[in-house]
Each structure stands twice: as structure tokens, then as C-alpha cells.
Image (cartoon, rainbow, N blue to C red):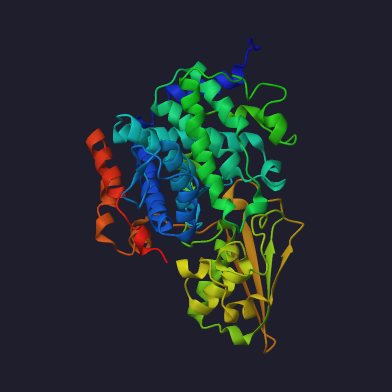
Length: 452
């Protein structure tokens, strides 16, 4: 079947395949830091009950050489991509990127690790392809505009399919023509709705995007046909998903100058809950340190710019999974306990004394403020507390809090397990194929028996 010329899709594919991030030391260092953070989240997530449920349901007993992070058994690469993507996102502790308005690493890395089990690559090549996949996913996020997310799509899933396919095409050294087909095959599998926030299906989005991206690249490499013009076609990706808010040239303009992994860069999470709740988490911990007690509080009001709490879809959570998307609960746990732990957000019922304070919290929007954009600087939250003695407490947080070094997070997330202790230093220094083999061996150690 012949198609009309697709200059933008071809330019996007060409940028993906010719990129060489290894010449940018800052980008490669940022990527290695992000990989440490991702592996912390994934090892911890591998021990969860629902990760085991998913692994069994998708056939983790199928033969293959791909690793399941935190498990000794090997499996089929497509299955590994699903399960490892899920495990990386199940705790909602993994990184976010403003241009994506979602979680890139937990989609891209599982696809790359699955391919690395099938073919011989150097660690440097894998890290570079991760940078390229993130660039593609972020550029697509910039081009799609704000309505995509606000109308209900989960960008981690919808953009992640294309980001994962781009990373695989780069690592496999595909041609631009083959890559364009792979991207189109990924785009036709693009799906995921925010209505699943608070359910097991939310982290499944990351896994299914990783699998779809890997499968798309494998199909294109095998000669499987697909439209090579997903960006240019009048009924293509933006026509279906952008709702008129697209900025088409953003997918290629100033590609890698700088790399999206360095500017605006990733936000590495300090708390295991939805990113949009992190500002109130930080304020709650600060007020705990100042000695503000829950029983002195009459009411709490959070003020956001329009759109800033779109992901915070839960006001009255019943369990910790739902509570990840509730700023009312997050603030209450932070204020009362002075910290946010993984056990605040597991599948057990929420604690009544935390909900007692959360029930006194409400939200409003400052309609005079600019609508939240992909720029984290446009985020803010104003906290107004009315104390029972009649005095007010007001705090404001601008932007997003985050970590610069996930080493301690890795230690906490892996419970100090010595079997995984060498992973952070290895990731920061690995370059050869032998280094990558060693990483895969360390990841393929069993932590599943430690699950509740």
C-alpha cells in the first residue's frame, strides 16, 4: 500500500535513530540516576501481591530469557515488559516528567531490559537508548497539548507506547523507515484512561505500554506492515488525541538541545503517592515539625491553579491505594505521622484517625491564576488552616519537591537487602556488555517470598 509523503513522521524517526546521547555526559549521568530510582521502585513493587497476580495472569511461566525483577525465574520478553513495568509503577513512587505529564522510565526501561535479554548490548548503549526513548516520549507530550490529559487520557500509557518503541528502535539500530512503522504500530495501540487511578489497572498502564512498544518494534523489524505517517496523517495520532491543542513541530524542533532528561529533567519522587499531592505532603511534614497537632485543627483548605489537581481524583479513600490520589489523606498522614511511608499506601483500609483529619479538608481553585501547564513552575498550592482557637495558619508551596540522589531511597525500598546493595554503584559506572549482564543477574534475585 502506498502512502503520501510523511515529512514530520520521517523527521521524528530519523532523529530517533541517529541520536547519540553518549557524547553528553550530563544526560548520561542523569539517566543513570533515574535508572537507580526506577530499580528501587521496581524491586519494592515486585514483592507486592498484585504484581504476583498480574505475573500469573499474563503467563510468567512461559519460557524465555528475560528477567522478572525481584524473581529468579526467567520468562518471555513481552511478559517481562508487562510485569516489570507494572512493578515499577505499582507503588506510585517512580519518576515523573513535566513534558510527558506522566511516568516515562517505568515504561521505557522494562522494554529495554527485555530486549537486552534477547540480544547482546553494552550498558552504555542501553542507557543511551533510554535517553532517546524519553526524548521521544517527552517531545510527543509537548506536541499533544494539555487537553489530551485533561480529557481523560493517562499519558504514561498513551505516550509511553511510542516512547518505548523509539527506545527499542534506537537500541536495535533500526532504519528510519522501519522506525516510522514501529512508531505507527505503537500509536495504534496507544490507550489508557485516568478513570483507572486508584485501581490496579493504573500501574498496568505502564506495563501494557512497555509491552506494546517492544512488540511494535519487533513487528516492524520482522517486516510487519503499518502506516508510516502517524504524525502526518489527517486521521493520525494528533487528530485522535490532541483535541485541537497540538503543537506538531514540538516533536522535532531543537531535538536533544538540551536533552529532555536534563531540561526540564525528571522529578524523582520523595513520597510514594501521586506527584500532584507532594506539595501538600511537604507542607504537612513541615507543620508536624513545627508542632501543629491534628486535634487543634478546625478546617483545612487547599487552593490550586485550575487543572493542578486533575490527577487527584479521590477525596474519601477507603484504602491506601486510593489514598495515593487524595491530597486530603496525604496531608493528614504527613501532618500526623511526620513522614510518608510505603505502608501508608498499601491495600489495607485507611486508618480512621488519619481520615478523621482528612474529612476536615477541602479544595478550591484560584480561577484568576493561569491554568497549570507542563512547566512545573506553574504549579502551586496554598494551604489555609483554621485552628479551633480561631487563629489561621497559611503556607504556600510553588513547584514540585523531589530528590536529587535516590541512593537512600534505594536502600529503604529494598529494605537494605544485601543481595541488591551493589546495584546503585554498578548502574552509575556500567558501560560494557559484561556490566549489563551483571546488572541483569543482580536484578533476577528472588524477593517475592517477602511479599505480604
